[in-house]
Length: 227
Ligand SMILES: C[S@@+](CC[C@H](N)C(=O)[O-])C[C@H]1O[C@@H](n2cnc3c(N)ncnc32)[C@H](O)[C@@H]1O
Image 1 (cartoon, helix red, strand yellow):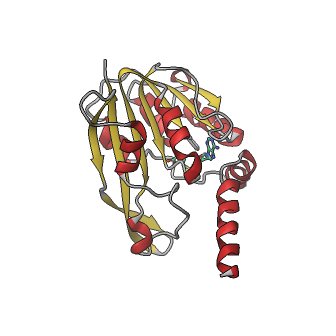
Image 2 (cartoon, rainbow, N blue to C red):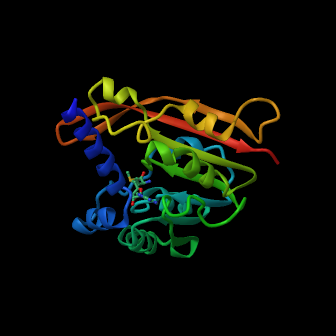
Image 3 (cartoon, rainbow, N blue to C red):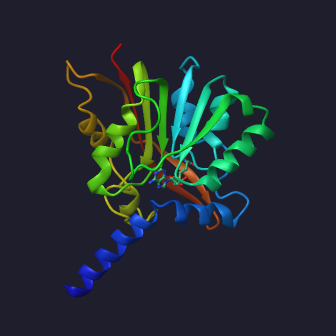
């Protein structure tokens, strides 16, 4: 019992750590590129039918999504808690010839859940931002606040099934969640809601790992704010 408690505290501590600039600066500073540099498959799928406008990429990491969006014609604002990551985004954008279409900015979801701009962006996208359960609602509502009337919020996350299949360790319910969690948080769906549900899906994809291919499930939510 005692032991169990201890483990629980440790994992909560670890989760808090994973939300600080220090943790991510070190992670991003340690190697040339932590992620692939390519956009997330779900972002590519979910923006294919949209007309480019203004986009906000929240917790952008090294900017694979932000640079890809800029290349499709979007005017992108990319924000993250890690200045090291943001410097990489800026460099990546220059390399790819879209430096003039990407702005970078600091954003700490735990300090202030609302990123830049109130009801400003045609698209707000957040991929794999892992937050503690207790902060989930405030952070996702804060992020959604940046969506303009008629604009869209796209959330991509790890699905909790990945724990059952052994694809991922259990890092707690704020890290992995089902589409309903986002819909409930925003009050999306019912008539009279400010948010229309366009996509609430849990597709599987193959992830390449050093140990070989792994099947993982994503949570994908796309909602549109009323005009
Ligand atoms: C798993 S990475 C995902 C990066 C990118 N969205 C992608 O899909 O490749 C999580 C990102 O969240 C950022 N992050 C962690 N804590 C944060 C916080 N409190 N506020 C804002 N961003 C945070 C990290 O710096 C990191 O870039």
